[in-house]
Image (cartoon, rainbow, N blue to C red):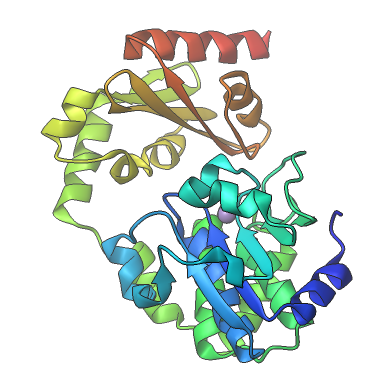
Length: 319
Ligand SMILES: [Mn+2]
């Protein structure tokens, strides 16, 4: 079933015990969209548990009480399973099988996708963030927007719009941000953690990025081999901002980074200016995402070969 909010509300009202999930390497929207629901469903008197495959980052821990996150459990006790910000079994990590084998499950997501893996699916790619969808659900459940819930939703919203500057920002996202700010979302703390804190490591990575980027026509990219990653004492997620940073360079319409996260395993992140579609490029490589922000994972022997292949795909698309 697709985008039937009433059916989803009915399923939630009927459930006594609910298990929540979100994707591996959770970003702020994954956490905001799922943890806001955790508190909202608790307010509704539900027995709720939330399961996340990975550890939180130091920055995330500043905004989220990590003690609520569980790793293991007897999953038979739950009569409803909800996942946010992904419709992919694989992206749920160790919980993938548990989720898709559940009889009663709900997927909430904002990525363009034709996969429906839940009994109920609410998938709206016009939404800037999954936190917007959680907001709608929480409003429909008539849950009080506490400062805590408002902050979690605002955190997801601002993160996925990159502080309301990405092209996915629209009147709905701005309106919801206004509503959340009115309900005491902690804007100061969220802005401080997301936009006003830079570690020495981040600055070192930025130095590497701007010393090593390559610009070919309107395409700008940066490659990070496994060796380099180790020399920078970094991991893949530390370099997640590379493609976003590169798209800001004058004359760039498409940017990408290739990070060799483990030997011969490459994670590619694409960004584009409006009018340019990187989702297509990522999907040719077996990945996906949004028109202006997408990604893929590939294997290969040489990072240069992967880069050449990407440039060829982009150039082919232009012809
Ligand atoms: Mn998201």
